[in-house]
Every structure is written in structure tokens, then in C-alpha cells.
Image 1 (cartoon, helix red, strand yellow):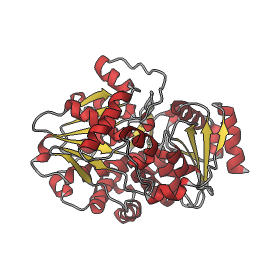
Image 2 (image 1 turned 45 degrees about the vertical axis):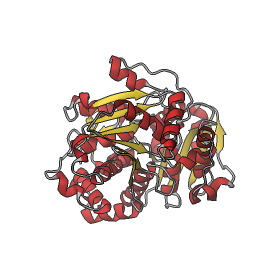
Image 3 (image 1 turned 30 degrees about the horizontal axis):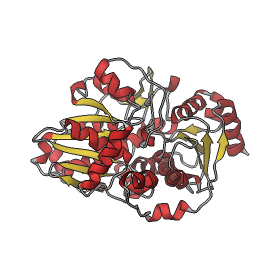
Length: 428
């Protein structure tokens, strides 16, 4: 698999190099220039989830990793499903929250952890990543206890739910968490600064487990195939998928699925009030504003890192820009969507509600709509209970960590303070 740095075409790497490096020169993202589409998509869709995922990932990665090795990685990573839940006659929720941390990022996090443990061959690695909510838990649990790999997770202080926070800040061991006195974009910028700092990057053998890492992105392609496989042949003819979007890795993965041959008519990039992409799609002007805090906090991102990959697919002619629209949903309509879903007998949380609202606005007669349920409602227990006025019970993973102490360090939004902390934490 040959990948190119989107900021420097001469910076070319293979899959293993891209996974280990995370980012290229000038903070550029690694991405292929072409994808090998399946000749008979229906044969692939007829396969069970795990064997199908092995075929997808083997096709994407190529002969760089033996198929048996990929099979072992997938079997260890994908030990949970991604069912479609019927909400109305023509609308489904793709439930991506049946993994150990109850969020879609379990797919990418666990796949990346297994890939890295194979290709690192015992060399020390420091995973440095930022989270706006769910990435932290997925990465922490995926890498917890893996030899020679330390994980450092930055997150915005006071801007994620307490249960989200406890899922990844109570593990200890090789998992180190840092609460930053700023927003997610600031955390993400500190991560980028660390990767630009040769002393830190090479001294600590840095890698990022954010959705910028190609391994996470490829893993996410698999559940789009799983979604379409659960539809009837008639429903597959006019599929519209609404993706709750923050850093835009999820939407990128869906578009890769379409390039591989998935019958998806169009996508909706559903955001909250942090609406950089919907405004850009309407006006052609890229004009990020200051990030604002919302109920759907994992999407509180004004400068999405993965957007250049979507732009690249459009520029390379892999995707027609006309198949993508953007919808921004404010707090009032997010709450209204949660209530509407509850009236339909489906309890959901704010991120999926944003996607549902966007889908409801755009779906036309004869189309089948899928919105992505990216997290279990209990991860946002307080806001869900406040909006719906009914109690939400805690599933086991949340109940187990709810009473544990948070082990995070606290730092100002200052890169030099972070650099000092990293060396002290990893090197001692």
C-alpha cells in the first residue's frame, strides 16, 4: 500500500511506516491516490462481518501484510458487532457502540493497537493523541497493558462528560492522561506541535492514535459494508448516510467504502454549531470560527483534521462533490431530535440526534436513510436524562469505572509545559 503525504507528494511511505509515523512532514496526512474497487460487491456483502473485514483490509493494505496476519488482527479486534436498528420504515441507526468503551472508536482503536503490536516488533512507542470524548477511551482500552507502548491522552478540561472522562482516566499503568485548560482544538494543536518537535518525536518514538492514523481510518471502512449488508436489495438502491462529524474521520471512511464499490447514493456531513464544513460546502469559503461547547461535545471541532483527505478524494476524481451535503444542527434542534427519536421508541444521545435531524431534513421519498449511532446513550447520561426526563441505566463498562478516581495530570494550554511533562512521564 503506497501512501502520499498530502502536503508533500515526495514523502511516500508504505502502510507500516504510515501507521508508525502517524503524520508526515509539515503535519501532512498520509493517504493513497487510488483504491482497488471490488469487482462483485454483492459477493462481499454476502459474507459475515469478520471474514468480509479481512477481505476489505487485505485489499486495502495489499501484500505488505500476509492475509493470515490480517485475519488474526481482525479476529482479535472486531469481537463485537454493528447492528442496524430500525427506527422508522425507511430510517435505520447503525449502532457502533457495542464495543468495550461503547463508542464507534473501538473499531479503529482496537485494530490499530493490534496492528502496532505486530509491526513494532518490541520497539518502544509513545502514543500521543487528543480526544474530544470517545477517542480517549477507545485508545486507552485498546492499548492498556500492551508491552513497550505508552499512551498519553490530552483532553479539554471540563468539556467532556464525567462518564466519558472516567472511562479512560482511571486505568493507570501505561495509560497517562492530561487535562488541558482549553478546548479540543488547542489539545490537537499541542499534539501537532509535538510531532513537529524532532526532540520529542524521535526521543519518545511518537505515534498518534487519532483518526489521522491511517490504520484507524481503514478499520472504520468495514462497518459501512456491514451497514449495507443488512439492507435488502431494494433498500440498497437509494441509500443516504448521515454521519455525525467532528474530526471527519468517520465520513472519510464512508467515502472510501463508496470508492471500493458500496452502493451509497450520497452522504450528509452532520455537525453541531461548529459548522465549518457545512458553511464551506455552501459558500466555498473555509472560515473556521472559535469552537463552541455543545451537548454533542465529541463534535466540538472547528478545524477538522481529516477534511484534507476528503478534499483529496474529490480532487483526484474518486468522489463527486455533488454526493456530499452539509447540515448544521443547533442545540435546540438537537434536543428536539432526541425527543422525536424517543417518541419513535428509540433512545439516543446528542451526536446521533444531530445525524438523525440532518437526515430527516434531507431524506426524500423512496430513499433509505442510515444515521450513525456513534456512542451509547449512557455515556451522556446526564444530558439524555435532562432532555428526555427519564432515567438511563448504566451498562457494565460505565458502572465499573463510575466510582473510580480520575488519575489525570492538569496542565495549562502551553506546549513547553506539555513537553516537560512528556519526558518526565515517559523517561522518568
